[in-house]
Image (spheres, rainbow, N blue to C red):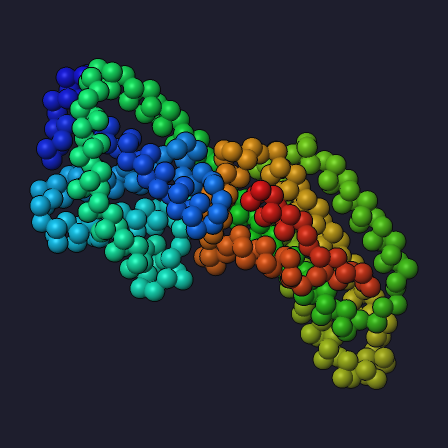
Length: 376
C-alpha cells in the first residue's frame, strides 16, 4: 500500500502527496474561514461545513490548482487567471450541488455586484486569484517541504486514521444537514401558516359581529389546556414525528385560513346589503362566522404549541456539533426557493404582525425563540 501510494502519480504528484495536501489545505482553509469570521463578526465560531477543523472545498480547490497550475508557476499572469477561474468554478459547482441536495444556500453573494446566482461574485473571484499567487509562491513550498520530512510509512498511518475520522464526519454532517433542511422547511411552512391564520382572523373579525363572546372565552380556555397538554407530550415525540405533525397541521391551517379569507370577503360584500341580509337570516351567517373564527383560534393555538414542540426538540441538540453548530457557523444561510434567511425570520417574528384572538393579542414568539436558540 505504501509503495502504491508513493509510486502512483497524477499530474506529477504521487497519491501520497495528493492525499496529504488535501488534508493540510482543508485544515488551512478552515483556519482562514475562522479568522475571517472572527475579524468580520467579532465572534470565534467553527466555520466549517463539517464538525471537525476542515473545509473540504479548500482541499479540493488546492488539489485542482496544484494539478492544473503548477506548470504555470513562473507565469504570474496566467497563474493569476487560473487562480481566478478554477477556485471560482469549484465554488459555483459546490454551492449549486449543496443547494440541490439540501435546498439551502450555505453562502450567498446576492448582495454583491456581478454575482452569478449568488454562488460566486467578482470580488471574491479576484481574491481567489491573489490567494493562489500567495499559496503557490510562498505557502506551498513550505508545505511540500514539511510533507517530505515525514517518513512515508508514518505519513500513511496518520492519513489512514485522519481519513477514517474525516469519513465519519462527512456521514454525520450529511445526516445533520438533511435533518436541518427538513427543520427549515417546517419552520418556513409554520411561519407562513401562522401569518395566513392571523390575516384570516383579522379579516373575519372586521366583518363579524361578536355575539358569542362567552362561548368563545370557554373555547379559548379549552384551547389553552390542549396546548399545554401538547407541550407536555413533547418529550414523547421523536424529532421527525414532531416535524411531520407540524407539517400536517400547517397544511390544514393554510386551507382553513384560505376559506376564512374567502368568507370574510363575502361578508364584506354582504355588509353593503345589511337590510337584505337581515331579512334572509343574517343571524345564521353571524353564527357561521363565529364558528369559523373559533376554528381559526384553535389552529393558531395549536400552531403555537407546535412551535414550542420544535423549540423543545431543538434544545436537546448539542451546540458544538450537528444542526445548531451548522447554523452558528452559517448565520446568513438562505433556505428554499424564497431564500428565507434566519435573520429574516428573526426580524419578522420580533416585529411581525401579531395573532389576534378576540380582544387579546399574542405574538408568535415560539418561532423567534427557535431561531434565537439555534444561534446561541
